[in-house]
Length: 201
Image (cartoon, rainbow, N blue to C red):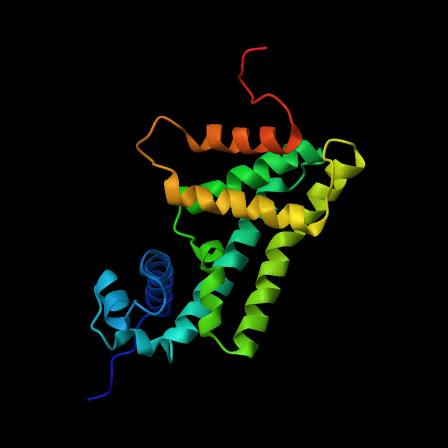
């Protein structure tokens, strides 16, 4: 009896589920400690089912990072479209990034250290995805520096910004008093030495 074909949309959805679950588990448990059984169980699959979509756990890691970063980049581009003012653009970039980390399913920016488990070719592909994600950030920082609102737009500044924002995922509580909006405002205020929006004058 011929094998029943699976709807392409359904397969795409299952693949996306696998990537989200894998990224979350790789962040929570570490790549080495996460098994394909863990990932399969997280999405209600049999232990060998992930290999229908990915040849290995390493391929899952690579795909989770690249596709997550590219999806995040597309989200950033849509969010800042038409915003000319660099300060407002930075606010939107920060809020969008934090929203993706703290309110969404994207954990790709937190998986940088796990690339050591991949070969050189995969690391090169991931580095290219990170470069694409960082372009609007660097352009915005340079515009702020040019306008005198930021002391420096040297590359380490951009990396320090990412480190600060990404680390919030380790301590931020969704059920706490601090909102993501307030966190984003605080981060921008620290970078630009301005009062948070809504603060007493």
